[in-house]
Length: 283
Length: 250
Image (cartoon, rainbow over all chains, first blue to last red; front, side, top):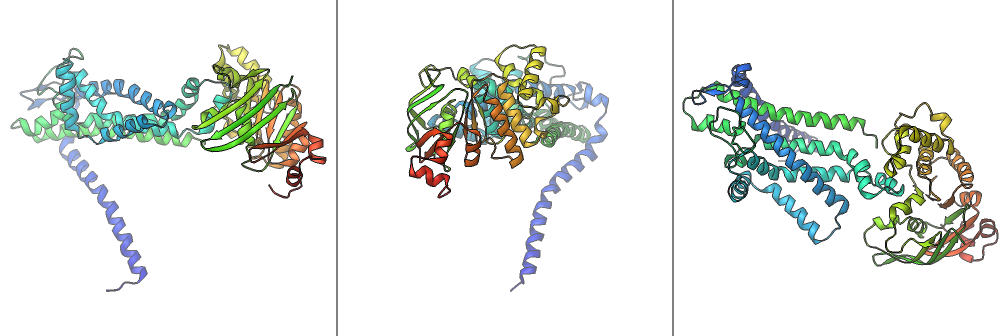
Protein backbone atom coordinates (compact mmCIF):
# COMPACT_ATOMS: atom_id res chain seq x y z
CA UNK A 1 0.00 0.00 0.00
CA UNK A 2 1.35 3.41 -0.91
CA UNK A 3 0.67 6.70 0.81
CA UNK A 4 1.46 10.14 -0.50
CA UNK A 5 4.12 12.03 1.46
CA UNK A 6 1.33 14.29 2.75
CA UNK A 7 -0.52 11.35 4.28
CA UNK A 8 2.70 9.92 5.70
CA UNK A 9 3.38 13.21 7.38
CA UNK A 10 -0.10 13.32 8.86
CA UNK A 11 0.24 9.78 10.20
CA UNK A 12 3.66 10.54 11.67
CA UNK A 13 2.40 13.70 13.38
CA UNK A 14 -0.60 11.84 14.73
CA UNK A 15 1.60 9.10 16.20
CA UNK A 16 3.90 11.66 17.78
CA UNK A 17 0.89 13.50 19.19
CA UNK A 18 -0.60 10.33 20.65
CA UNK A 19 2.73 9.29 22.18
CA UNK A 20 3.13 12.58 23.98
CA UNK A 21 -0.50 12.71 25.10
CA UNK A 22 -0.22 9.23 26.62
CA UNK A 23 2.43 10.63 28.96
CA UNK A 24 -0.02 12.95 30.67
CA UNK A 25 -2.82 10.38 31.01
CA UNK A 26 -1.41 8.52 34.04
CA UNK A 27 -0.67 11.80 35.77
CA UNK A 28 -4.23 12.99 35.33
CA UNK A 29 -5.73 9.65 36.34
CA UNK A 30 -3.58 9.36 39.48
CA UNK A 31 -4.32 12.89 40.58
CA UNK A 32 -8.05 12.61 39.85
CA UNK A 33 -8.43 9.39 41.83
CA UNK A 34 -6.31 10.65 44.71
CA UNK A 35 -8.14 13.94 44.97
CA UNK A 36 -11.55 12.36 44.55
CA UNK A 37 -11.04 9.69 47.19
CA UNK A 38 -8.46 11.33 49.41
CA UNK A 39 -9.63 14.90 49.72
CA UNK A 40 -12.64 14.08 51.96
CA UNK A 41 -10.23 12.60 54.53
CA UNK A 42 -8.12 15.70 54.76
CA UNK A 43 -8.90 18.10 57.53
CA UNK A 44 -6.96 19.84 60.27
CA UNK A 45 -7.29 16.88 62.63
CA UNK A 46 -6.04 14.39 60.00
CA UNK A 47 -2.91 16.47 59.49
CA UNK A 48 -2.16 17.26 63.13
CA UNK A 49 -3.40 14.34 65.24
CA UNK A 50 -1.77 11.10 66.28
CA UNK A 51 -3.08 7.90 64.74
CA UNK A 52 -5.46 5.93 66.93
CA UNK A 53 -7.01 2.47 67.05
CA UNK A 54 -4.11 0.75 65.28
CA UNK A 55 -3.97 3.46 62.62
CA UNK A 56 -7.61 2.93 61.65
CA UNK A 57 -8.57 6.35 62.95
CA UNK A 58 -6.99 9.63 63.94
CA UNK A 59 -4.38 11.53 61.96
CA UNK A 60 -1.02 11.00 60.32
CA UNK A 61 0.89 13.75 62.12
CA UNK A 62 3.90 11.64 63.20
CA UNK A 63 4.32 10.33 59.66
CA UNK A 64 4.32 13.85 58.20
CA UNK A 65 6.77 15.06 60.81
CA UNK A 66 8.93 11.96 60.36
CA UNK A 67 9.19 12.59 56.66
CA UNK A 68 10.09 16.24 57.31
CA UNK A 69 12.80 15.19 59.79
CA UNK A 70 14.22 12.70 57.32
CA UNK A 71 14.18 15.19 54.48
CA UNK A 72 15.94 17.84 56.59
CA UNK A 73 18.55 15.35 57.74
CA UNK A 74 19.10 14.26 54.17
CA UNK A 75 19.69 17.84 53.00
CA UNK A 76 22.08 18.57 55.85
CA UNK A 77 24.23 15.61 54.82
CA UNK A 78 23.82 15.43 51.06
CA UNK A 79 23.88 19.10 50.05
CA UNK A 80 27.33 20.08 51.41
CA UNK A 81 28.85 16.73 50.49
CA UNK A 82 27.42 16.80 46.97
CA UNK A 83 28.28 20.43 46.27
CA UNK A 84 31.83 20.08 47.61
CA UNK A 85 32.35 16.96 45.53
CA UNK A 86 31.02 18.74 42.45
CA UNK A 87 33.30 21.74 43.06
CA UNK A 88 36.27 19.42 43.36
CA UNK A 89 35.40 17.53 40.19
CA UNK A 90 34.68 20.62 38.10
CA UNK A 91 37.23 23.11 39.39
CA UNK A 92 40.16 21.22 40.82
CA UNK A 93 40.44 17.64 39.65
CA UNK A 94 42.61 16.98 36.65
CA UNK A 95 41.26 14.70 33.95
CA UNK A 96 42.82 11.42 34.91
CA UNK A 97 42.00 7.84 35.72
CA UNK A 98 40.80 8.67 39.23
CA UNK A 99 38.33 11.36 38.18
CA UNK A 100 36.98 9.10 35.45
CA UNK A 101 36.47 6.38 38.05
CA UNK A 102 34.67 8.84 40.31
CA UNK A 103 32.40 9.87 37.47
CA UNK A 104 31.64 6.27 36.57
CA UNK A 105 30.91 5.57 40.23
CA UNK A 106 28.46 8.47 40.37
CA UNK A 107 26.59 7.23 37.30
CA UNK A 108 26.44 3.72 38.75
CA UNK A 109 25.32 4.99 42.13
CA UNK A 110 22.39 6.66 40.38
CA UNK A 111 21.38 3.31 38.90
CA UNK A 112 21.40 1.26 42.10
CA UNK A 113 17.87 0.11 43.06
CA UNK A 114 16.58 1.83 46.17
CA UNK A 115 16.06 -1.41 48.10
CA UNK A 116 19.81 -2.04 47.79
CA UNK A 117 20.42 1.33 49.43
CA UNK A 118 18.07 0.24 52.20
CA UNK A 119 19.99 -2.97 52.83
CA UNK A 120 23.32 -1.15 52.56
CA UNK A 121 22.14 1.44 55.07
CA UNK A 122 21.01 -1.28 57.46
CA UNK A 123 24.31 -3.11 57.14
CA UNK A 124 26.56 -0.07 57.48
CA UNK A 125 24.77 2.46 59.66
CA UNK A 126 22.26 0.45 61.67
CA UNK A 127 24.37 -2.62 62.44
CA UNK A 128 28.06 -1.97 61.81
CA UNK A 129 28.18 1.63 63.05
CA UNK A 130 25.65 0.75 65.77
CA UNK A 131 23.35 3.67 65.08
CA UNK A 132 20.37 1.42 65.44
CA UNK A 133 17.14 1.91 63.55
CA UNK A 134 17.13 5.69 63.77
CA UNK A 135 16.58 8.99 62.00
CA UNK A 136 20.36 9.42 61.55
CA UNK A 137 20.68 6.05 59.86
CA UNK A 138 17.69 6.74 57.60
CA UNK A 139 18.81 10.26 56.67
CA UNK A 140 22.34 9.04 55.89
CA UNK A 141 20.95 6.25 53.70
CA UNK A 142 18.68 8.66 51.84
CA UNK A 143 21.55 11.13 51.51
CA UNK A 144 23.74 8.55 49.81
CA UNK A 145 20.87 7.68 47.51
CA UNK A 146 20.38 11.26 46.32
CA UNK A 147 24.08 12.17 46.20
CA UNK A 148 24.39 11.34 42.49
CA UNK A 149 21.44 13.60 41.67
CA UNK A 150 22.94 16.48 43.63
CA UNK A 151 26.49 15.99 42.34
CA UNK A 152 25.36 15.72 38.73
CA UNK A 153 23.14 18.77 38.84
CA UNK A 154 25.73 20.79 40.78
CA UNK A 155 28.39 19.82 38.26
CA UNK A 156 26.21 20.95 35.38
CA UNK A 157 25.40 24.19 37.18
CA UNK A 158 29.09 24.89 37.84
CA UNK A 159 30.08 24.06 34.28
CA UNK A 160 27.43 26.41 32.91
CA UNK A 161 29.08 29.40 34.58
CA UNK A 162 30.94 31.09 31.71
CA UNK A 163 34.70 30.64 31.60
CA UNK A 164 35.06 34.38 31.05
CA UNK A 165 33.79 35.07 34.60
CA UNK A 166 36.49 32.86 36.07
CA UNK A 167 39.19 34.40 33.88
CA UNK A 168 38.07 37.92 34.72
CA UNK A 169 38.28 37.16 38.41
CA UNK A 170 41.59 35.30 38.30
CA UNK A 171 43.13 38.03 36.16
CA UNK A 172 42.33 40.52 38.91
CA UNK A 173 44.61 38.57 41.21
CA UNK A 174 41.73 36.91 43.04
CA UNK A 175 42.65 33.44 44.26
CA UNK A 176 41.03 30.37 42.83
CA UNK A 177 39.05 29.60 45.96
CA UNK A 178 37.80 33.20 46.23
CA UNK A 179 36.85 33.06 42.57
CA UNK A 180 34.81 29.93 43.22
CA UNK A 181 33.31 31.38 46.35
CA UNK A 182 32.38 34.83 45.04
CA UNK A 183 31.86 34.36 41.29
CA UNK A 184 31.24 30.73 40.39
CA UNK A 185 29.05 29.55 43.26
CA UNK A 186 26.59 32.49 43.29
CA UNK A 187 26.02 32.01 39.59
CA UNK A 188 25.65 28.26 39.92
CA UNK A 189 23.37 28.40 42.95
CA UNK A 190 20.01 28.25 41.13
CA UNK A 191 21.02 25.11 39.25
CA UNK A 192 22.33 23.55 42.44
CA UNK A 193 19.09 24.38 44.26
CA UNK A 194 16.94 22.87 41.54
CA UNK A 195 18.92 19.64 41.60
CA UNK A 196 18.79 19.54 45.36
CA UNK A 197 15.04 19.96 45.50
CA UNK A 198 14.54 17.23 42.91
CA UNK A 199 16.80 14.95 44.93
CA UNK A 200 14.90 15.74 48.09
CA UNK A 201 11.54 15.11 46.52
CA UNK A 202 12.84 11.68 45.57
CA UNK A 203 14.08 11.10 49.11
CA UNK A 204 10.69 12.12 50.51
CA UNK A 205 8.87 9.56 48.40
CA UNK A 206 11.09 6.48 48.71
CA UNK A 207 10.04 3.55 50.89
CA UNK A 208 12.76 0.95 50.44
CA UNK A 209 15.75 2.90 51.83
CA UNK A 210 13.91 3.75 55.06
CA UNK A 211 12.31 0.35 55.46
CA UNK A 212 15.17 -1.20 57.44
CA UNK A 213 16.91 1.94 58.63
CA UNK A 214 14.38 4.18 60.35
CA UNK A 215 10.73 3.58 59.67
CA UNK A 216 8.55 2.60 62.59
CA UNK A 217 5.49 0.47 61.95
CA UNK A 218 3.34 2.25 64.50
CA UNK A 219 4.65 4.96 66.80
CA UNK A 220 1.93 7.35 67.89
CA UNK A 221 4.34 9.97 69.26
CA UNK A 222 7.05 12.21 67.91
CA UNK A 223 10.68 10.99 68.02
CA UNK A 224 12.63 12.17 71.05
CA UNK A 225 16.04 12.44 69.40
CA UNK A 226 17.77 11.76 66.11
CA UNK A 227 18.62 8.31 67.43
CA UNK A 228 14.94 7.50 67.72
CA UNK A 229 12.83 5.70 65.14
CA UNK A 230 10.07 7.59 63.42
CA UNK A 231 7.13 7.03 61.14
CA UNK A 232 7.37 8.25 57.58
CA UNK A 233 4.70 8.86 54.98
CA UNK A 234 5.74 6.39 52.24
CA UNK A 235 6.18 3.52 54.67
CA UNK A 236 3.02 4.47 56.55
CA UNK A 237 1.13 4.32 53.28
CA UNK A 238 2.55 0.89 52.53
CA UNK A 239 1.54 -0.30 56.00
CA UNK A 240 -1.97 1.14 55.70
CA UNK A 241 -2.59 -0.47 52.36
CA UNK A 242 -1.12 -3.94 52.93
CA UNK A 243 -0.36 -4.68 56.57
CA UNK A 244 -3.38 -3.48 58.54
CA UNK A 245 -6.78 -4.99 57.91
CA UNK A 246 -9.94 -2.89 57.80
CA UNK A 247 -8.44 0.53 57.25
CA UNK A 248 -10.98 2.78 55.62
CA UNK A 249 -9.98 3.65 52.04
CA UNK A 250 -10.54 7.28 52.93
CA UNK A 251 -7.51 7.26 55.24
CA UNK A 252 -5.42 5.33 52.72
CA UNK A 253 -6.17 7.74 49.91
CA UNK A 254 -5.83 10.73 52.20
CA UNK A 255 -2.33 9.61 53.20
CA UNK A 256 -1.37 9.05 49.58
CA UNK A 257 -2.68 12.49 48.69
CA UNK A 258 -0.62 14.15 51.42
CA UNK A 259 2.53 12.33 50.26
CA UNK A 260 2.01 13.14 46.60
CA UNK A 261 1.09 16.69 47.54
CA UNK A 262 4.32 17.17 49.46
CA UNK A 263 6.48 15.81 46.64
CA UNK A 264 4.51 17.84 44.12
CA UNK A 265 5.01 21.00 46.18
CA UNK A 266 8.77 20.44 46.34
CA UNK A 267 8.95 19.98 42.57
CA UNK A 268 6.84 23.07 42.07
CA UNK A 269 9.28 25.09 44.17
CA UNK A 270 12.13 23.78 42.00
CA UNK A 271 10.31 24.80 38.82
CA UNK A 272 9.51 28.26 40.17
CA UNK A 273 13.05 28.88 41.39
CA UNK A 274 14.44 27.78 38.03
CA UNK A 275 12.15 29.89 35.89
CA UNK A 276 12.60 32.89 38.16
CA UNK A 277 16.37 32.69 37.85
CA UNK A 278 16.26 32.01 34.12
CA UNK A 279 14.31 35.19 33.55
CA UNK A 280 16.92 37.14 35.51
CA UNK A 281 19.93 35.52 33.87
CA UNK A 282 21.46 37.81 31.30
CA UNK A 283 24.36 36.05 29.73
CA UNK B 1 66.23 48.01 32.94
CA UNK B 2 63.16 47.07 30.96
CA UNK B 3 59.87 46.65 32.77
CA UNK B 4 59.34 43.21 31.28
CA UNK B 5 62.12 41.09 29.90
CA UNK B 6 61.19 37.89 28.09
CA UNK B 7 64.12 35.52 27.60
CA UNK B 8 64.23 32.36 25.47
CA UNK B 9 60.56 31.64 26.01
CA UNK B 10 59.21 28.39 24.57
CA UNK B 11 55.63 27.23 25.03
CA UNK B 12 54.13 23.87 24.13
CA UNK B 13 50.47 22.87 23.94
CA UNK B 14 51.08 19.14 24.23
CA UNK B 15 53.28 18.28 21.26
CA UNK B 16 52.59 21.59 19.46
CA UNK B 17 55.08 24.39 19.99
CA UNK B 18 53.15 27.65 20.04
CA UNK B 19 56.00 29.99 21.02
CA UNK B 20 59.52 29.48 19.71
CA UNK B 21 62.42 31.11 21.51
CA UNK B 22 60.80 34.49 22.06
CA UNK B 23 63.06 37.30 23.33
CA UNK B 24 61.45 40.64 23.98
CA UNK B 25 62.08 43.64 26.22
CA UNK B 26 59.13 45.85 27.04
CA UNK B 27 59.66 49.39 28.26
CA UNK B 28 57.86 51.04 31.13
CA UNK B 29 54.91 53.38 30.50
CA UNK B 30 54.77 52.71 26.82
CA UNK B 31 52.26 50.93 24.66
CA UNK B 32 53.72 47.88 23.01
CA UNK B 33 51.63 46.25 20.29
CA UNK B 34 51.88 42.66 19.17
CA UNK B 35 50.63 42.07 15.65
CA UNK B 36 50.52 39.07 13.37
CA UNK B 37 48.10 36.72 11.60
CA UNK B 38 45.71 34.64 13.72
CA UNK B 39 47.34 31.66 15.36
CA UNK B 40 50.79 33.28 15.39
CA UNK B 41 50.96 33.06 19.19
CA UNK B 42 50.50 36.72 20.09
CA UNK B 43 47.64 36.08 22.54
CA UNK B 44 49.52 33.10 23.94
CA UNK B 45 52.55 35.30 24.54
CA UNK B 46 50.38 37.91 26.24
CA UNK B 47 48.84 35.28 28.52
CA UNK B 48 52.33 34.14 29.54
CA UNK B 49 52.87 37.46 31.28
CA UNK B 50 50.20 36.94 33.94
CA UNK B 51 50.45 33.15 33.75
CA UNK B 52 46.88 32.71 32.55
CA UNK B 53 48.18 29.84 30.42
CA UNK B 54 48.56 27.89 33.65
CA UNK B 55 44.81 27.34 33.53
CA UNK B 56 45.09 25.22 30.41
CA UNK B 57 45.92 21.54 30.81
CA UNK B 58 48.99 20.24 29.02
CA UNK B 59 50.84 23.53 28.69
CA UNK B 60 54.60 23.45 29.20
CA UNK B 61 56.67 26.62 29.36
CA UNK B 62 60.45 27.03 29.44
CA UNK B 63 62.52 30.19 29.53
CA UNK B 64 62.25 33.26 31.68
CA UNK B 65 59.90 36.19 32.02
CA UNK B 66 61.40 38.90 34.22
CA UNK B 67 59.05 41.56 35.50
CA UNK B 68 60.88 44.25 37.45
CA UNK B 69 63.81 41.86 37.44
CA UNK B 70 61.98 38.91 38.97
CA UNK B 71 61.33 35.72 37.04
CA UNK B 72 57.62 35.02 37.29
CA UNK B 73 58.16 31.38 36.31
CA UNK B 74 60.37 30.83 39.34
CA UNK B 75 58.98 28.17 41.70
CA UNK B 76 57.01 29.75 44.50
CA UNK B 77 55.83 32.78 42.54
CA UNK B 78 52.68 34.11 44.16
CA UNK B 79 50.12 34.09 41.33
CA UNK B 80 47.78 36.33 43.29
CA UNK B 81 50.46 39.02 43.66
CA UNK B 82 51.54 38.60 40.05
CA UNK B 83 48.05 39.03 38.66
CA UNK B 84 47.36 42.01 40.88
CA UNK B 85 50.42 43.62 39.36
CA UNK B 86 49.81 42.44 35.80
CA UNK B 87 46.15 42.91 34.96
CA UNK B 88 44.30 41.83 31.86
CA UNK B 89 41.55 43.17 29.63
CA UNK B 90 39.87 40.56 27.48
CA UNK B 91 38.66 40.36 23.92
CA UNK B 92 34.99 40.40 24.82
CA UNK B 93 34.01 42.72 27.65
CA UNK B 94 33.37 40.36 30.58
CA UNK B 95 31.77 42.25 33.45
CA UNK B 96 30.31 40.09 36.22
CA UNK B 97 26.51 39.88 36.36
CA UNK B 98 26.57 42.35 39.25
CA UNK B 99 25.94 46.04 39.66
CA UNK B 100 28.40 48.59 38.27
CA UNK B 101 29.55 49.36 41.81
CA UNK B 102 30.05 45.72 42.74
CA UNK B 103 32.00 45.02 39.57
CA UNK B 104 34.60 47.62 40.44
CA UNK B 105 34.54 46.90 44.16
CA UNK B 106 35.04 43.18 43.52
CA UNK B 107 38.83 43.28 43.36
CA UNK B 108 39.45 45.58 46.36
CA UNK B 109 36.82 43.70 48.39
CA UNK B 110 38.41 40.31 47.88
CA UNK B 111 41.91 41.68 48.41
CA UNK B 112 41.42 43.41 51.70
CA UNK B 113 39.05 44.59 54.31
CA UNK B 114 37.82 47.92 53.06
CA UNK B 115 35.08 49.92 54.61
CA UNK B 116 32.24 51.29 52.55
CA UNK B 117 33.68 54.82 52.34
CA UNK B 118 37.01 53.55 51.04
CA UNK B 119 35.25 51.38 48.48
CA UNK B 120 33.11 54.28 47.29
CA UNK B 121 36.25 56.31 46.91
CA UNK B 122 37.96 53.61 44.84
CA UNK B 123 34.90 53.15 42.65
CA UNK B 124 34.71 56.87 41.93
CA UNK B 125 38.42 57.17 41.17
CA UNK B 126 38.40 54.12 38.93
CA UNK B 127 35.37 55.28 36.99
CA UNK B 128 36.88 58.76 36.57
CA UNK B 129 40.02 57.12 35.27
CA UNK B 130 38.09 55.59 32.38
CA UNK B 131 35.83 58.63 31.95
CA UNK B 132 32.66 56.84 32.97
CA UNK B 133 32.02 58.62 36.26
CA UNK B 134 29.99 61.51 34.90
CA UNK B 135 27.75 59.20 32.90
CA UNK B 136 27.30 56.51 35.52
CA UNK B 137 27.54 58.17 38.91
CA UNK B 138 23.78 57.99 39.43
CA UNK B 139 23.48 54.47 38.04
CA UNK B 140 25.97 52.60 40.21
CA UNK B 141 23.29 50.12 41.27
CA UNK B 142 22.37 49.21 37.70
CA UNK B 143 23.46 45.88 36.30
CA UNK B 144 26.73 46.18 34.40
CA UNK B 145 25.27 43.96 31.70
CA UNK B 146 22.89 46.72 30.60
CA UNK B 147 25.74 48.98 29.51
CA UNK B 148 26.81 49.30 25.89
CA UNK B 149 29.75 47.11 24.86
CA UNK B 150 32.09 50.09 24.86
CA UNK B 151 31.01 51.09 28.35
CA UNK B 152 31.35 47.47 29.46
CA UNK B 153 34.91 47.39 28.18
CA UNK B 154 35.66 50.67 29.95
CA UNK B 155 34.12 49.22 33.08
CA UNK B 156 36.38 46.18 32.78
CA UNK B 157 39.36 48.54 32.56
CA UNK B 158 38.05 50.44 35.59
CA UNK B 159 37.67 47.14 37.44
CA UNK B 160 41.33 46.55 36.71
CA UNK B 161 42.36 50.08 37.71
CA UNK B 162 40.73 49.44 41.08
CA UNK B 163 43.34 46.80 41.98
CA UNK B 164 46.16 49.21 41.04
CA UNK B 165 48.22 47.16 38.59
CA UNK B 166 51.54 48.19 37.02
CA UNK B 167 51.03 46.48 33.72
CA UNK B 168 47.90 46.12 31.63
CA UNK B 169 47.62 43.33 29.12
CA UNK B 170 44.97 43.93 26.48
CA UNK B 171 43.93 41.02 24.34
CA UNK B 172 42.24 42.53 21.27
CA UNK B 173 40.24 44.86 23.51
CA UNK B 174 38.37 46.45 20.62
CA UNK B 175 37.50 43.47 18.49
CA UNK B 176 33.91 43.41 19.77
CA UNK B 177 33.46 47.18 19.35
CA UNK B 178 32.39 49.40 16.48
CA UNK B 179 34.80 51.99 14.98
CA UNK B 180 33.54 54.90 17.07
CA UNK B 181 33.83 52.95 20.30
CA UNK B 182 37.21 51.67 19.19
CA UNK B 183 38.61 55.16 18.70
CA UNK B 184 37.31 56.14 22.14
CA UNK B 185 39.04 53.20 23.78
CA UNK B 186 42.20 54.11 21.89
CA UNK B 187 42.04 57.65 23.27
CA UNK B 188 41.64 56.12 26.70
CA UNK B 189 44.70 53.95 26.16
CA UNK B 190 46.80 57.00 25.29
CA UNK B 191 45.65 58.46 28.60
CA UNK B 192 46.33 55.26 30.57
CA UNK B 193 49.86 55.10 29.18
CA UNK B 194 50.87 57.82 31.62
CA UNK B 195 50.31 55.45 34.53
CA UNK B 196 50.69 51.94 33.19
CA UNK B 197 52.86 49.81 30.99
CA UNK B 198 50.47 48.54 28.33
CA UNK B 199 50.77 45.54 26.07
CA UNK B 200 48.14 45.18 23.40
CA UNK B 201 47.49 42.31 21.05
CA UNK B 202 45.64 43.30 17.94
CA UNK B 203 45.08 42.06 14.43
CA UNK B 204 44.11 45.56 13.42
CA UNK B 205 47.36 46.97 12.01
CA UNK B 206 46.05 50.53 11.83
CA UNK B 207 45.28 50.33 15.52
CA UNK B 208 48.82 49.20 16.30
CA UNK B 209 50.19 52.01 14.15
CA UNK B 210 47.92 54.57 15.82
CA UNK B 211 48.31 53.75 19.50
CA UNK B 212 51.61 52.01 20.08
CA UNK B 213 55.17 53.15 20.68
CA UNK B 214 56.73 49.80 19.98
CA UNK B 215 55.50 47.02 17.75
CA UNK B 216 56.37 43.36 17.62
CA UNK B 217 55.45 41.27 14.61
CA UNK B 218 54.87 37.58 15.20
CA UNK B 219 54.57 34.72 12.78
CA UNK B 220 54.09 31.01 13.51
CA UNK B 221 55.22 31.30 17.11
CA UNK B 222 58.30 33.40 16.42
CA UNK B 223 58.88 37.08 17.08
CA UNK B 224 60.00 38.14 13.61
CA UNK B 225 60.64 41.79 14.22
CA UNK B 226 60.47 44.24 17.06
CA UNK B 227 61.17 47.94 17.18
CA UNK B 228 59.81 51.47 17.19
CA UNK B 229 56.32 51.41 15.72
CA UNK B 230 57.18 54.00 13.11
CA UNK B 231 60.20 52.04 11.99
CA UNK B 232 58.34 48.71 11.85
CA UNK B 233 55.57 50.21 9.75
CA UNK B 234 57.69 52.36 7.41
CA UNK B 235 60.97 50.54 7.03
CA UNK B 236 60.53 46.97 8.23
CA UNK B 237 63.71 44.96 8.29
CA UNK B 238 62.09 41.61 7.53
CA UNK B 239 60.47 40.87 4.22
CA UNK B 240 57.72 38.87 6.03
CA UNK B 241 56.82 41.93 8.13
CA UNK B 242 56.59 44.09 5.04
CA UNK B 243 54.39 41.54 3.28
CA UNK B 244 52.09 41.34 6.31
CA UNK B 245 51.68 45.06 6.89
CA UNK B 246 51.12 45.72 3.22
CA UNK B 247 48.36 43.11 3.27
CA UNK B 248 50.02 40.35 1.24
CA UNK B 249 48.68 37.80 3.76
CA UNK B 250 47.01 37.89 7.14
